[in-house]
Image 1 (cartoon, one colour):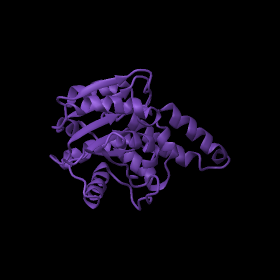
Image 2 (image 1 turned 60 degrees about the vertical axis):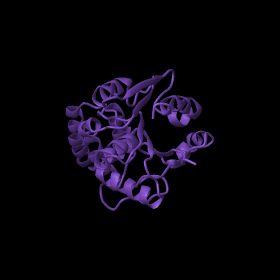
Image 3 (image 1 turned 90 degrees about the vertical axis):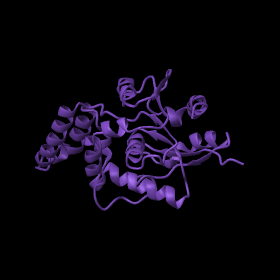
Image 4 (image 1 turned 45 degrees about the horizontal axis):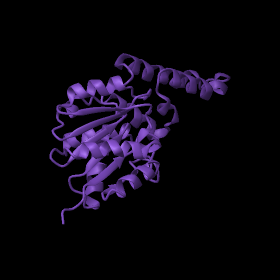
Length: 241
């Protein structure tokens, strides 16, 4: 009997494998194997002792696959997990059966100039608001600022994870997207305001042979908010894998 397809769900920033329990159940009941690891720094995993890069996450993923004897997985990469999926596929060609990316910022939604300015101002603000009495307003101002520039995840990150976030969002994934040679489904929520459909459309132009499907009236969290709907689209894609 042929081994069933194996899915590995890679979660977004600030989430964990548990976030996707319902999605995993929906996939399993269709006869597939499913894994949903906690990436380093999230869920039950340990906080890294140093800031990490996408390559570090790809190395972790390779080790995880080997330990669990997983070969030719289909990655479901949500948001940040989509970045990791693309990087892994670039570093380990011919090891992935297919990619399903949802809300994955192949291109950062924040323009590069704005991103660099944001990081510079964040450093200045840290110094400025450490001075009394301005330090009393530090958290409130930081929360407003990060929301304003579209980087709420940065506000939530602490220690090495904050530096990890800065590294991750600055990494260019164009070569990783150009190197995709496996079936790739870009499965997006119509109302994703975190990583808009416009980003998916740009990715679709770069990832050769990719399919772009937009789920009506769904947002960035569609994989775990509407798992049955999400899987129904995956099943259509699997017929071509």
